[in-house]
Amino acid sequence: MIDTKKTIKHIVSWLKEYIKKSQSNGFIIGISGGIDSSVTSVLVAMTTHPTITLEMPILEKKKNFLSQKHINFLKSKFINVHSLKRDLSCLLNNFCTVVNTDDNNVTTITEIKKNKNLALANIKSRLRMMTLYYYANIKNYLVVGTGNKIEDFGVGFFTKYGDGGVDLHPIADLTKSEIRSIAKELNILDCIQNAIPTDGLWDDQRSDEEQLKASYEELEWAMKMSEKKLKRISSFKERKYEIMKIYQTLHKKNIHKMIPIPVCKIPRN
Image 1: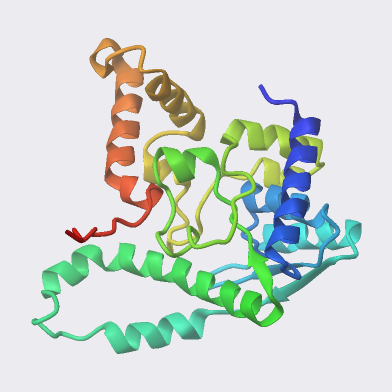
Image 2: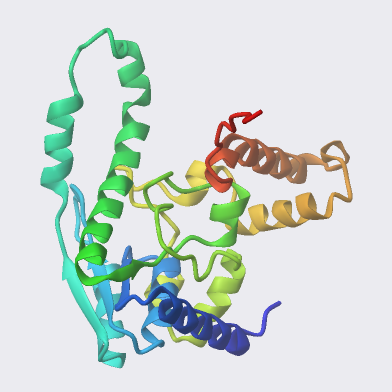
């Protein structure tokens, strides 16, 4: 297990060094009310550099009180933190109006019905990415990622060019368990520490575990087993076999998110 105090100090120092080298003026981070964005935003604020927290609700049926509670917590402790809130619902509605046509040359109605929900969930994430970069470009700020190790390098549980589109990843080498220990050390609000993880992209508010079919703790175990390459998957029994299968399937499916964009190299001779 990591030393939380040393890890916090290391990340804050790394952030300070990175922003100095980049010659940027500050940081901007999207706040969801989840433990990952909450921990990351505190670490960023600890640098004392100007930090903007941005809430971006999209067609939400109920208010996200956790994100507002965390922002209030953050601003009460750090004078360098400022907050913005922008409702992006009209952007999504306008986008849907433009693209939802029955042009059979593009796709079939069956394909639209099959893939529409996932496509719209990804569009929500990409609208948020564009909004973050709009303000980042205006102020010469860095967009801070909030993905953890399991999401970013294990199962690829993020939207390509959505929440995966950032300038730097402060917590991407930490597992969910390690992030929880840091959250406790940073005194992140209990309601956020105990909240069920969700990406907030679906109308039914399905949890991450419901989407992944496994908990983060289970996937952490599978990632460690895969990295060690000690056993064949067939040697695991019952639930462990199922978890390994889930992990390997998701890793293979989403590996394109985790590697550099392929470039077709042209022979010059």
